[in-house]
Length: 103
Image 1 (cartoon, rainbow, N blue to C red):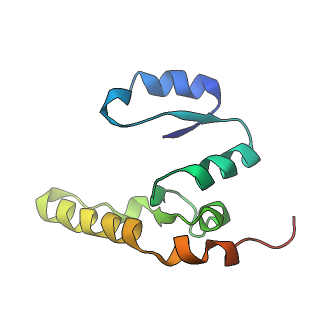
Image 2 (cartoon, rainbow, N blue to C red):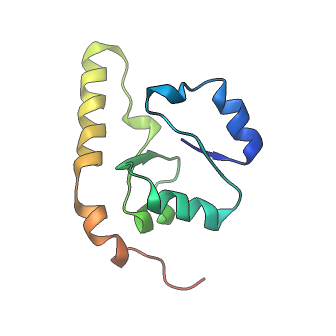
């Protein structure tokens, strides 16, 4: 879990059990976030932006809150969408071509 600022990590620690394979990492600025995304083993990231260049540059798929459905059948469809985004090789394979040009 990437969390903005070291204060955020302390707050998140009370909510996340790091012994279950979840790790917390703080980032302080945009460049630090880019490095953290690039080195993360995650295949996809939950994000609010329709197209987030930081995720594209890092080769990560995006999961939006609209992808989540309620109920058992919805949970099954949600899981299918998340797994498909994580398993898709497109962004990992072509992320170097998806970088922004310019500042």
